[in-house]
Structure formats: C-alpha cells, structure tokens
Image 1 (cartoon, rainbow, N blue to C red):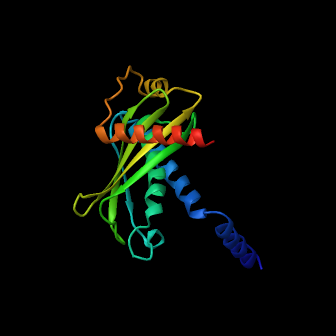
Image 2 (cartoon, rainbow, N blue to C red):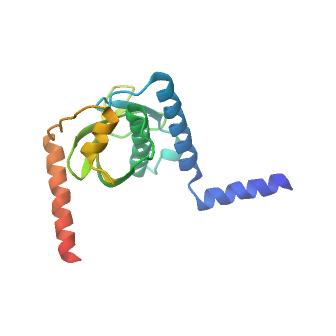
Image 3 (cartoon, rainbow, N blue to C red):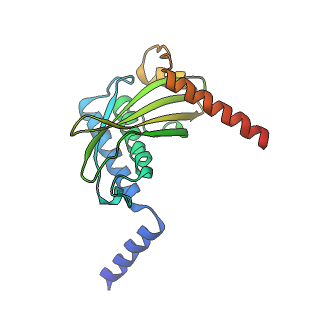
Length: 195
C-alpha cells in the first residue's frame, strides 16, 4: 500500500511540477559549491565550462535537441558560472531580462557538449553573458546564446567589483552584442508607446 501511495505521489509530482529540473538544479548547485570549496573560486572574468550530454528527454520530433532545451541548459551553465567563478549563490536577485539563441548546427542524441560561459560586458542596468555550446566530438560551436541579466538592489559594477575584490574596467561590447542591446532598447521603447 505504501509503495502505491509513494508511486502515486511521485507521478503526481511529475504531472504538476518539472521534477527533473529541480533535481538537476540541486545536483548542479551542490556539485559546483563543493568543487568551489575544494578548489577555490576562479577569476570572475574567466570562462567557465559546463559539460553536458544530449539524452532522450532533450529530443524533439526531428530527433535532435529541442530548441527550448538550449535555454534550460543555459540556466545550469549560469549556476555553474556564478558559483565557480564568484561563490555567488542567491545573495542578489538576478533575473534574465532577455536572451537570444543563434542555432548553427544540431546537437544530436548522445552528443556531449560544453557550454562555455563568460561575461562579455555590463552597463548600469545589466550584465551581458555569452553561452557557447561547443560539441566535444569536433569542437564546433553549435549555438551561441546572448543573455541580459538584470540585478535587483545593486548595480552590476558594484556587484562584480565586490565579487572579484578588485576594480574592474567594463569590457568594450563586441559588435553583435552592441547591436543586440540596441535592438532590445528599440523594442522596449516601441512597447512602451503601445502601453
């Protein structure tokens, strides 16, 4: 009877919540936290690599990684980046304000890939990150994701300098990042006029 009840509770949990997401988040955060405690923090401006594999739940009807999975994998790559490069967990509220994915080539079933995450730049409102999905078999960059991370309660400059323990110069924006930020600003202005 107890087995039936626990099985029903598990099934209900999977129906009402994305249990896999929460379990994997706990695993990633725990692993990265332990690794950071053992090996120490990395430099904040250093690229972080998060290794993953494409499995059957990641697939779509065309038998390659579902487009939505890329952004989900970016969540875990960001957790890894912030924990391993800064020791930061949830002290400040960080919100993904916008993201854009450029798909270059499919990731197939059982492909291993590394998500290389780095800070590209920041301004007074946001930190701009890049996630590059590099397939391990041929080192091909299958997708590039640009992410605008907004902070609540602290400026990006203050947070990054506090984490790094040193004065940081804002890196110049690469051309595609600059255009992407401008595009987001134009979109916001247009939507404000509609509201």
